[in-house]
Length: 290
Image (cartoon, rainbow, N blue to C red; front, side, top):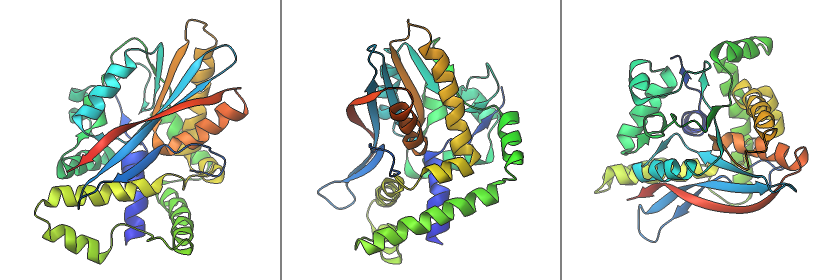
């Protein structure tokens, strides 16, 4: 049961599969991590901003996202994005159909409904309701719903087959954890029982969710990216837009704002084919517990 939960959690929080109508071995960076605190049920779920630069001095920041976070987290991102020349963002949507809090409420997909419900349970906010997508420097860099459906049909893929592929990756990840003497999951009968008995149940379950999410970084590899449309094909869409942005010399500071699960593949392309080198990394606190 926990395996189904874990790769469902990966999709819900680290992959943005919303349709809005209006560490792999080849990656050198970590993009998502959990840092335990000193006390019981204390810790932080952190996302990375990793910076790369080419010989012309152009910088690209890979801004990892979890699609549920605290208000302070999204406020910090909004302030940061204002300083960038271009912000390439993910969202399966039609051209010109930027998300707004009102549109999210009116046209909620099944995935976004689960995201918002989970956010309410954990006392965190939904990204599409907190990030300001209206500035002119925001550039859509994703598939539209028709393209996503067409790519899935060409691969004879559906959401069930996607779950199966993630399950295989999850099994491999758990086996590797066991071989290294680590617990394969944060959600055990004992941990759940302790959380239910905790004085602050919200903090306790938020801790378990954050710890579990911290384990997902690194289970995505090139083969899985190629197999799953919501990973590989959307990465290619982002890279195509990035090439266009790079052609304009005005764009010296570029951000790619995508879910953490997409970042190993995008980073691999930057390092291998686009002539960029990593120059820095910093971490943002997406969740702080308690």
